[in-house]
Image (cartoon, rainbow, N blue to C red; front, side, top):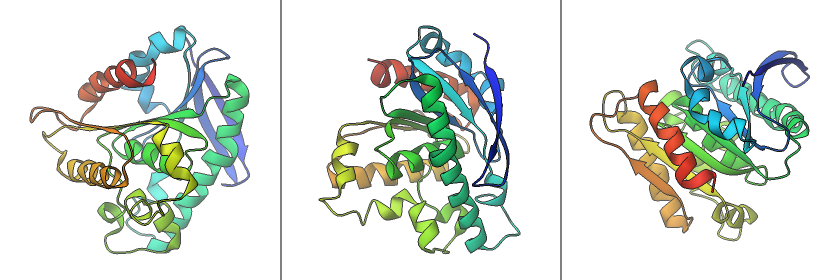
Length: 248
């Protein structure tokens, strides 16, 4: 199935933003977030869309490949912490306030969406899911981290805090309304233990520990020491978790 490239002007970001969609009307919305500094087409170019094509062609999911602005937020080496956090928050609102509603109208499915991603995209998937479980009912984070300190060091402000699941989940009250939504969602994290996975493995284990203490059902999977931080492994992991947990 051929995808459709869509470009629209973002009032939040004051610029054109491009994304690509695959699927039929009626499929459950699934938003894929690119790895660090990635573009919307990376997920397709590295074969990840192909792994989900059975679910797309059967009408089970409506896949949206989102563009990122990591270069002016998480990855920037020149901007100060406050500006970087502000840029991340603006992009968050672009996704939630503009892309998400448009995609929901396109797919016509009322279920809460699925957030997926690899590496930095795995962080983004987790951040959107944990911040807005009213909009996302499932997440698959592959080789993601959930703590801002890997990119921001010791810097923290209120805006960055809102984008740091490892921080806000630890402090979430037990009676917060999001808790029940988490418990009625599919939460999947996975990380290999091979090359370039060390930081992400720590981040995945940290989230595993936090969710366990909160009593939130989730599945955190740790693959072997030969499993590296790279596309060939993510292409194996994503369809495995879709079949096992997401598309029942």
